[in-house]
Image (cartoon, rainbow, N blue to C red; front, side):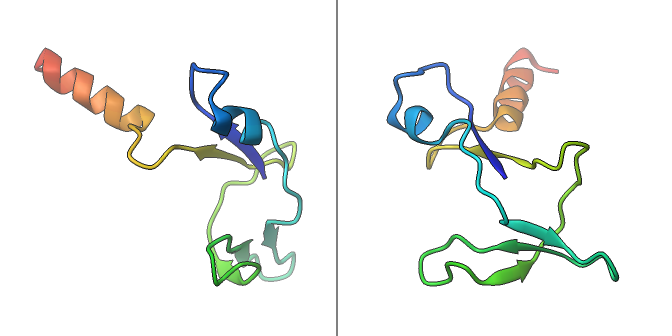
Length: 87
C-alpha cells in the first residue's frame, strides 16, 4: 500500500509525514479462492484482517488517498463546481 496525500501545500505536516510512504503486507488475496482482505488500522483493531475488495494493479502497489478530517474530496469538489455552474 502506498500512501498519497493530495494537497498543494507541500509543507503540510501530513504531506511530509505520509506522502509516498509504502506499507507492505497490508492487503492480501488468497490464490486458491480469491478472497481479498486488508489489515485494519483502527485503534483497538490494529492488525486484525477484515474482508475487503480492492482492484489489483500491474505493479502490485495499491495507492490509498489520505484526506484530513473534513477535507473535500476530488469528487465532492467536482460536484460542487458543477452545481455552482448549474450543470
